[in-house]
Image 1: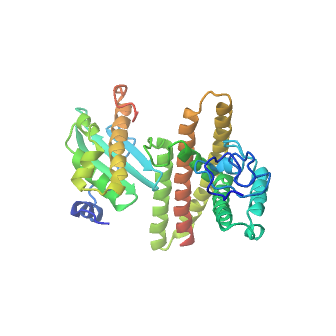
Image 2: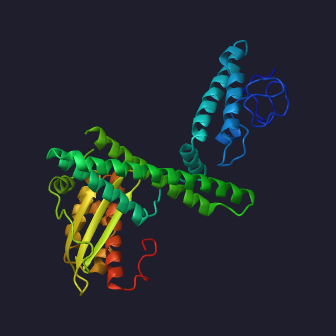
Length: 224
Length: 137
């Protein structure tokens, strides 16, 4: 038997010699395959590189892979294969946590395409910047009112603002999922998704901005 | 992190804090934000019919460098022609304030704020904004 890790051809199972292209565990003999560096998180679960994901399916595959890589199951294997098992488990966990969450999945998608939030940012839409400014001013009013011992009415206004922001964040999530579906459609049809990628980044950027703002709002409300 | 004396001075004694009535004809307002850090900056310019910036106000919610950058540009633009102010590059702010690399985005924000304020004023005046920097428009 070949020692996992010594194989140079990564498409052939290091255990039984069957074709096990890009799989973490060979379907034929159950031998854990040495990690292929260029594997992306979608391929880890043998899923297509799509932004719309069937979460139930993903979870099922995650559990199945985790079981096959469990240390108890590999205790009689070679040290090299056990190490490969540990590494694969770490990869599977990281991959699962990343792609099950829409925001993390979107950020990962950006990184796969050489993009990231904060890189060469376009201007924030004026309306969004104005909203953030108004909310920050409202928080400033709350701090001032609290110091004057009259937080009551402003407190209520800030709570209303908090509700508006939550609704707006829900809306941004909806737009994110629409963008994911559009990206997949354009990818499948081969029309290209360069514009979709710009949009993905803009939506994630807005979401990040709003969440940071909500954190500031919550901090002030808790200080009450 | 080591900030320059100039940044600390502008942070501790910010110049021209406040606001003008944004409905005034001779006032241009620019509000710009940085989603990565949550900062938001408002810059207002009071501009004469001859296109000279006679006064400026700012209000910034953000880190010390963002406050210092916006405070600094209010001094920088006063008395200048709008075209000159519009042409100010963030690199000048970085150099003058000696901003550390991680704070360069604060200077970008300040540059954008000037452009947004000038564009707003031009729009109010009914002046053609076509030939301005497209990326900003």
